[in-house]
Length: 457
Image (cartoon, rainbow, N blue to C red):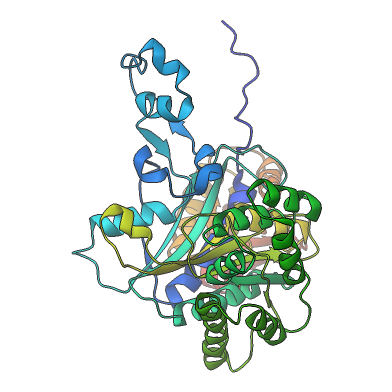
């Protein structure tokens, strides 16, 4: 029976060799920066128990978790009346596991399970795919890689300052020059909710104003009204959405607004302290790439302190990095009072940004540098020796595997964009000097193996 034309699920992608070389460059750059700052590698399973993931991302996030049906007859334990109770009660009966939604919650679970073997503060980086049952669109995928670094076991704001340093270093190394880091603090948002007359409703406030870059301000206000925010509360909120000036001036203005809130002023002072630490590290302020933005909310429910989000400028792509401070994420796993802070790079979106900005053209291609071509059995044997020698010297090399005309062999090299070819015939074997052809310029010369290695290296 015909299967029809093969396809892949919406929101997923294949990556051919050309794309993988570019992706590996991005991942390798980020990994190197993480290691420079003392982070160690970690991997967790693609699937987690559903109970580990639910309740950590807010109601909207929970709905985007990809559930995995139980093996075998997954309906065996379901009664007819269970179908009328709604999906929230039915789901655990047919699905005990799910694909991970992010890397932070699995990390918290790992820390709780292995706390007696870890040295705190524990710094780890993790580069793995995550899955979200989202509606696919430009820059938004159902399967994508995250590149996380987290420190857990310290509440020192030195860690936030190091995150700003890492952000700057990563984007400089990738060639992304125009970007902006938006920075806020959840304590400030909680104090704003209280000042508006809605104490304890900072989550509702955050979920609403987090949509300011997606829907109109009027629609955000309508959502706040539905959540119980009065017209007076919204009027109080409006000036904070329009603050202008430098980071210092914005912090001064919000300090005046939150003068009676110890929690809010603590959030303001935390941002100031982060900037002080950053200046201690680098000798400069981060004002050139960091903007304090009190409308930044980040919807994830576990953030409690500093929150940040990064967008590349001049491209039509969403945030490419984000993160924040969480004071008790491991508490739900039996390990309370472990403060942590982390950052996540969106590999797929960074790729799209670099592609849109044509930043890949200048990259060194980490692929085959030399194709060894041959005329007959004797020159093939000689070519194998040369290829082995090239590889021992770290030069990526291939020997053409079949007997074919030189034109076909060179056409193969052209198709793979291999820059050099070594052509071996009877004269080359006799003189122990081999023809090295530059396939970019078309020039060629007869060289010894040592001279070839020196030329290509």
